[in-house]
Length: 196
Ligand SMILES: *[C@@H]1O[C@H](CO)[C@@H](O)[C@H](O)[C@H]1NC(C)=O
Image (tube, rainbow, N blue to C red; front, side, top):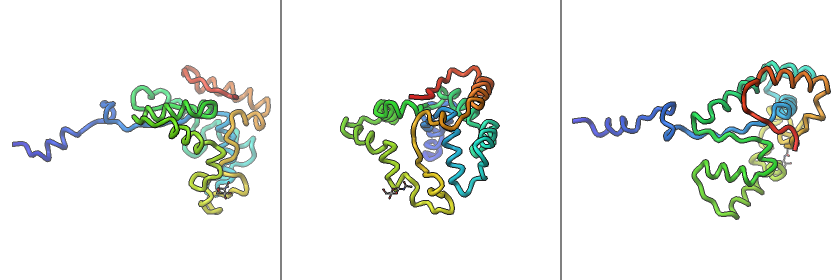
């Protein structure tokens, strides 16, 4: 006789690599590389636990070379994009969330198998706006000590806009970045919105 317990365990064994139905769900939000670089630069400046970012020009090189915490933007985004259909991954874009938050929240809702009333969705839209989250102590990191995040240097939630990179990139940096972007991202079907 097989042990019931053992049988249960066997029948529940599930390899997430081959069984979509039991794999965890991943929600991935990608943001265009240029705004990411700007955001990350200001985060590096205010973080007291990351290395000094140096000047913007210096950080520009660091970012391009992927020598930042959590690795190269190019590898990260491309990597998740390439496997998005292989696992349960909802791949969202920051720019879409800014343009039409309700639509993107509904995508998350469907992905999570939920069906929420319209007024609940509207409430989520309001409460997750940048302006609201900036004033929400549960999300604005105001409880994190200054020795870790110094918000007097730059707030954790800074601007939350699309296209702020234009105020940071020089014309030469922009041309160089576009060239490097093409080399690194080359053949992906990924298409980012750079301004709204
Ligand atoms: C975080 O939210 C609290 C409560 O609204 C507010 O007093 C504080 O100024 C906010 N902090 C930052 C850094 O925006």
